[in-house]
Length: 421
Ligand SMILES: Cc1ncc(COP(=O)(O)O)c(C=O)c1O
Image (tube, rainbow, N blue to C red; front, side, top):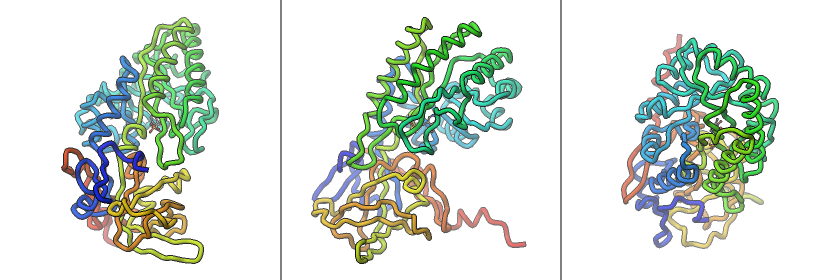
């Protein structure tokens, strides 16, 4: 179980510490729910992923958690940013990431977004008919084309993106036309982009996609006389959220993706491409732990409910993707975990259940729960449901914690309201 926690996790007489700071100290100083990011893990993963695809480039999938401090830290380790909105672009720029280190995505980029991308000097991933012309009008200078190659990833339907009929990218004939449109419009067309899906456990779908990508790149060369210099393979490497989950490590998958793509292009008679990756979850997911306070315990016939002070407003993944998590009693980790309980959120929804069953030392009001592998698509997808402010986040390392996102207050929420007519 502890192997799901970040690298700096230690257990001292039953008390969990992250980055050298006791979880109880973090919770009492910053409140709960609290998302704790381990600096050591973030840096190690960023370095390992970059090394696995050298001389390629990595762009952090900002959607996994848009946060200026995290983006800055990842940039120090060589990662640029993949952004999918004006807001994410602003976060990347605020972190000091230069335009040429930004890849701009979106299946529905409006003219304002294209103009912002052009003003920042970002590279735009063309995704829809006519977008090349609109991008050129907006002043975009460099682009990729996103192609969907009809591969079904073995992952939750909501995060499958490379199949036929996907709302993202275009199938080969239309992608070819978009590429031609970009070349005609005078945009520097650097290469091709694919993103198969997210939380992929193995290499199968990506391997199949890379083979089809090389064939498509060959077709681009034959029909347009254009050779891709870049193969951007997107993100999608999975992580383990609970002990039973079997997932090949992202670093291994990244190395396999880069090697396979280079070989497939060369085998198709094309120049070896520069491989780009856009890891989100695999960079920041394992680095994050969420701390919750137990508010009530109800022992009912057949089920014990342990209700916490957060839930679907800070982590909607169980509701969206049937995601399974686990938890540890953060100050009682040395006690036998001999009661199987369900961890419920505090929201007015019966479906607001964070964990269906987990074994804990008989829970009591006031216990602190630590939920590992919650660094990606949790706070990023948080809401204000039930008028709840979104949690704070801290970065821990070397025995200290730095606030990287303050907690939203009720006053913050009220500040958005207009007085009644
Ligand atoms: C185009 C693109 N790149 C990168 C990512 C990041 O994916 P992941 O967090 O699974 O690595 C996504 C996620 O949906 C995406 O759509």
